[in-house]
Image 1 (cartoon, rainbow, N blue to C red):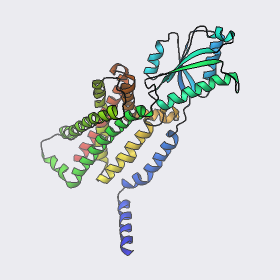
Image 2: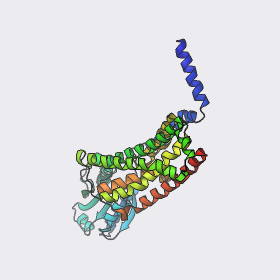
Image 3: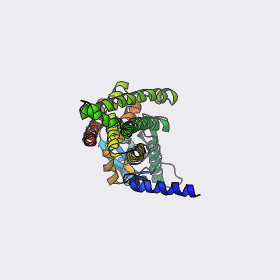
Image 4: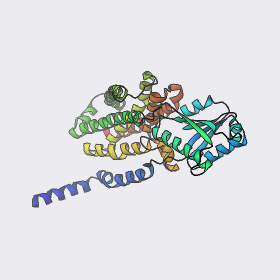
Length: 363
């Protein structure tokens, strides 16, 4: 027991002497709990709804108002042409699209159930399923308890017709694996060299800090590409996730994401003295918040407005959108260039900050 007590005292003193490790151990868990408490909600509210009212009658406007007046839907767009609904669903402006055909009011006046069409974005299986259930509830509520609905709903789910949740989650898991591999390996490898003293030996070489950083990052970028390519067969053949878009587009848009993760790994290495610090910084400060705030499992639109603004600084958010868009929707670079541009900007900014700190550490 005496030996055990000595070891415990020694470990506590070592923690106290490390000013960077104490905040990671005690502040980071609280920070994560706050984020998770706000972000970890599976309730789906205010689903974006696009409306195409071809009847333009009092009955059709009343139906739209019932959707808008509920807590489940938010009318995001009104269009006059049904073909425009596909574009709104594809670019994420709307999650569901309601079409009210011409003759809807006449059917109601004749005592028959009017027919409407509701298109749901099945690439987000949870939101798509909930939206269909909410829509059915709105339509049944009009007729009263136990009454036959006055509107007959014929739903059509796009992109993920069977609402298979793994089609929604597997592409996100691929992004998570790529982030972990590139970020953690970069941080751990550089810190390990600093621990054993080989990093300082590079100071006597004619390499500039920029070339040194490039030489450190390129191998891990190649590792990341290999990881991405090795996970694709598992997603396609084992989980049978459809790949409706171009593999080349996917690889091209993967490059700016790796700029972000490699830059974060380099930044972590400049903030860490030991491999333990690097691992904990990666996991608790840089990785877990990205998972919570990226839409990996929890819809961003359900988070408080302040947290929604924070998500624009999360690289994983944009790459998950890219993966799900390419896999499930077949969207090309023309539809995903805003995400690619955002990743490029975040990546270059992160690399610049990491390079400045890395150069200061070498100096």
